[in-house]
Image (cartoon, rainbow, N blue to C red):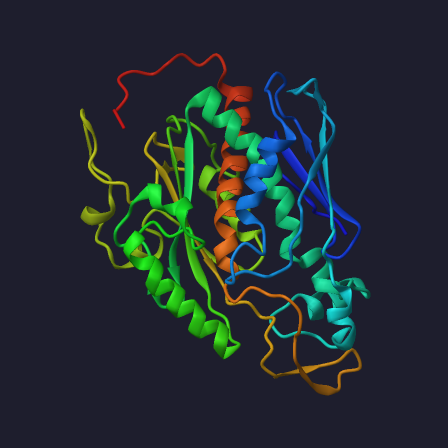
Length: 364
């Protein structure tokens, strides 16, 4: 299986399966000299962990990360950084009854036909368990961006099923509820909505938004290394993603040119329909991305499928699954934003280190 690495200058390679002994990653190209600890990474992992509320899978992994290379006396050395997390709460028996059936909406069918073999336990490599290592790696990138460039990245739940969550936005509220909802007045309604979904045995999708503030003008590169191209690729690589928008996104279809263009004045931009990226290069405005996640396909409700022989069967997925997988996606989206920005920071330095500062520059 190829293509398990991501990045241009800064690369992340992940490995491991959902029900294997461990998952892990190797980071290549991370700058030396930054202090980092396993506890800091663990704090980031707790935010995406399962089992923290009734609205996520009840699988309870400890997610104790081991840094096995690339860090000496608590500081990155510039060598490849390898991290490993043991799987401690996998229940493979939950999948034994359906090991020869293809779960609709999962990668079972496609993996089987591409590779001729698949790990049926929890989806194997296609499981969202893989994203744990993205969050671990993203913790390093986010810290570097914050400490060296004062870049802040914040993600939140914009919509769960039919329930819009961010008509009123209070950033301080995001970390105070299990939905990453920025509107304190919507949390109770979301609890009731998700309770009804959970009781029905069905699932719902979600929209997650992420914003990066403090990114300077000039990051990104035409034509095939556009910042928005890499951001969309990163977000689409997350399990269950079905759509990505930058800035106005698909709303641009119904906008006029006068509405969509971000007019400029000496005092600053008058709007940000472009989402902080023009021509594939950052404008200095906040970078804004939205990601759509499909409903969870593992359901206790019977569904039609076929088995490995092609015979029609009825499938029921037991075990521990998220009624809305998008809830845990918020820290994953933040991590992928951090990783792409860090990669483009290094790419920008590689080409433009000696380019003089351009003036005047529009305030942001």
